[in-house]
Image (cartoon, rainbow, N blue to C red; front, side, top):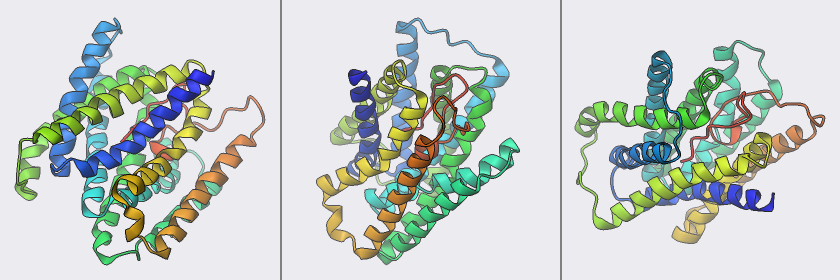
Length: 316
């Protein structure tokens, strides 16, 4: 059990590290995600082959997952775009708005009642982001892009919920990474025409960070999460992943000293967001033992367990 918790926290720490890597890599956000998927998708297929994993799925499910993977890829593009236009801390804080968008979108898509408490906690996050919005005028573009990223990040996991009833989370990840790569490959000429890049080929430093991002922060982190889930409940894993933006912001403070660029508004906003995470954690932990939390299938801090007791997370 102790080893499983260590694996879980390493996976969450690696998820938080992706924001730091997004700033270290000099490529624009579109190319960054394209290269990441170009490295990740074949690696997952090779891993599935070596582990003799059954990967065949229904063709209709495959095309649905490819489409959801395209949404996931755009979520990544806007996430790293938020970091490029602001900084790591602001990008990760904006990602916390996933909870608010999920509380609104999931009832509409899944056709069930709105959870007012989750909506209020999500609105608390939005209030926190409004405080951060006043940090620095040149961060505002990054904040807007970050909110778009959070919107996309709340959408594709909700769509995953029905797929996960029929397809394992490992195969969903495999096909979503592949679908995201295909969709982004088709969109890349238009993207580069709209947002020209000074360089299309990564330098040697960029290659190092891209390999770390793809193999360590994506493939290894996913396998560590799966390993932890063999001994820890999906509910505990979901709560632990609430620490992802916290870890990421602390890493940004250490690597880039971003704390020097933040004023009181940032810290007020960050505390409000942290308060919402704590309140949601306490609320879930007070449920009766053995009671399953309402399934949500969302990305990031607002996520929930899938029907098989496993979780597909979109680690950044």
